[in-house]
Image (tube, rainbow, N blue to C red; front, top):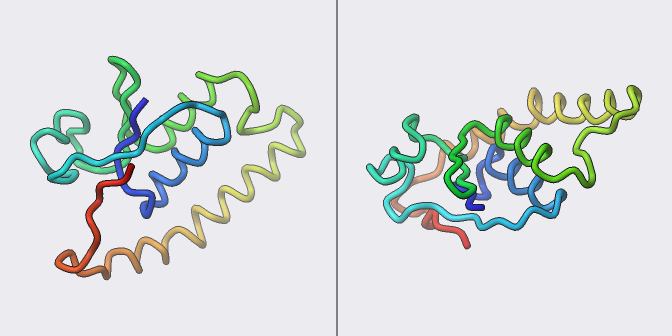
Length: 122
């Protein structure tokens, strides 16, 4: 399985963390010319990261990828079945999504592409 994007993206990081937690073997990479290249647009026509390729299956959007990873490996569910424990997990995710992630994205958008390290990750 290949996950496309940079670990600096909170959306990509979400997928990578889920894959690691679930024990799903994966690689993290980005095509040489980035997410707007013709080759990447064949994988994800929206030109955004993350995208995931597992054999012939191609998915994009981090929520869909994480749900796929959770269903693919039945070990260690990402959300507990107990209602109270599940609510706590969802609350942590909501806090991150609503309050932590937006300022991180705003900071990352301030980067100068001329001095930014390549998106390629292995």
